[in-house]
Length: 278
Image (cartoon, rainbow, N blue to C red; front, side, top):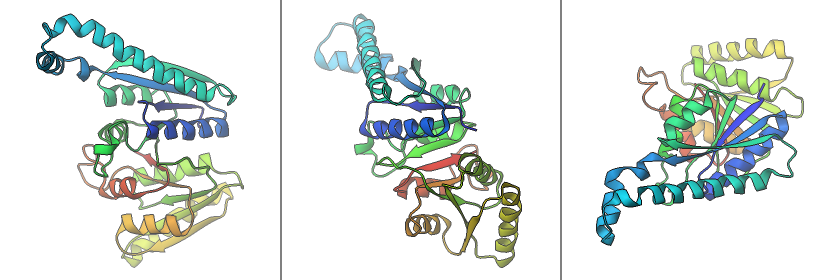
């Protein structure tokens, strides 16, 4: 059960959507919400400030470091206060936290204390992303042991859930999370299996049926062929899904280093939130 949610914020419009989605889940599960902003320590490092001071004709940059840090901390407080204003009438428990360090590392470390993380697909530098997944978000997905909900461009209420299942442990964890979160009859759960192998299709279908049986909840299983990423996206769109659940990694031995290709594709292409499990 989800009882605590972490939402990292950076002041961007995408981040604001992540907060709206986090508020929705906090209300849905009566969970506590924590807003986190990390002052990027790289902005306070010598080379960065040295380049600025030299280009503007300033005295040695060390003289300006305390003031620059103060400005960044004030901006961080403003971001968190804005989030707090969004939540004031939402009837949920809320706390805010400001930290200084490497952004993705601190978010991942903090995530261990929560049941779920809600983070924007892209952050404040989205206009220069060329459609790629934000580097902070990808790092958080790789490092975080908790489910990570990556939000889309717009807020979505959840009624229709699609789970991508391929038999991997991460995929199995996603299936379990979906049932735990959306077992109520007001939610619909669909499972998508993509394979070109008949025996594998039958095996995976049997696994889903066996897992879902004790929950006494009807599950629609779609067995598809072709490219996994595209098939899942096409199914979610055709089925009017509100969220996609899936494992974060492929079967590669590099699964602790890189995001699985199917997961990366879906995060780039999906117009709805995607919840990933390690």
